[in-house]
Image (cartoon, rainbow, N blue to C red; front, side, top):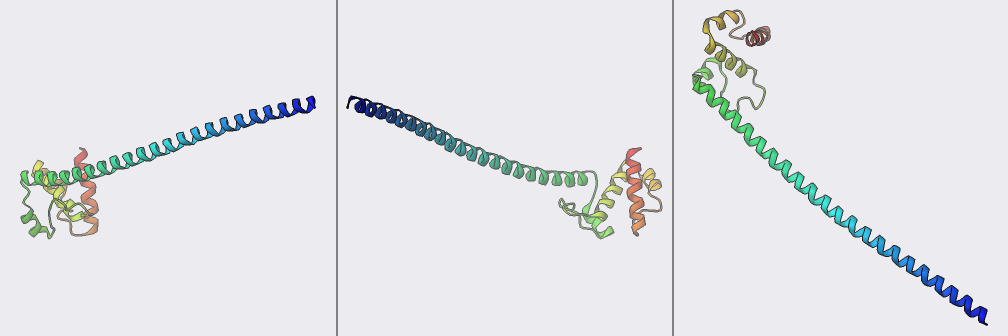
Length: 152
């Protein structure tokens, strides 16, 4: 009987120890899960903050681009570019948003105006035979000469 009681006591102690280990593991797992939930929440908040900053930067970049367009167009006018005169002469609409889409003819007119503003006689000489642009080959030659004129 004593042996049976001792065995029972040992079994009870072992079961108690095992139960304590299980409880300890559960607590550790719960703490780990809480930490993961917290870190998930933190990650989510950080991602939302980043997206907010990106959106704000995108809005700021768009506003800056709008300002640059308006500034460029205003500076052209200050340099003596009269949009209404050139619009009638070359049949192109000139505005701050004229380069929102590809506008080859508008670009050619603006480039010629800028080169002529720097040195009219040199500009006429440099672009003789390709200005005003009337054919596709004239357009290609105008661009090639523009790049050559700006480099040297």
